Length: 189
Image (cartoon, rainbow, N blue to C red; front, top):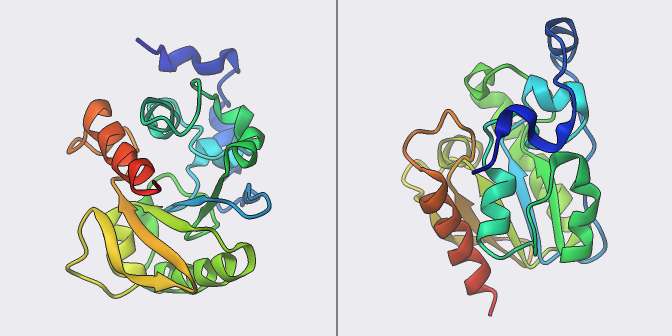
């Protein structure tokens, strides 16, 4: 069992540091010719404070990545720089950090969708995987989108929607979340 309270042994940001992280941005982690570019909704305040994607304790992105076979071991958020070595990258639809994703407006999500298309055009992944079906629906005006492969392409990249790995997403426990990530990995051949 992973102890998310002391995940990676990195000290937690203080309340003041979390408050100061509001609207902060964190850089994308994208190497040359990524196989899969994962796209989160937006950074949490925890990620904004630490500068690491999916850093909030309880977020299941890193465990799902490992359990699905994308990485050979469980990576800690501060090891995000290793992702390009596995053919992976990470970005966000909306760059600004918020306490909750529901603080974002539909206009921000739509603008983020356009930004994602530009990022995909620049780095040319084989697949772009958006984590969060509700955000995907809003960003790309596809109200009936479901988890899994999507019919559209972004440039030449296939599009896949994964469940939101936030600990707040009670619809998916870690095993079922990892199974969805595994389905994507297995689709790569």
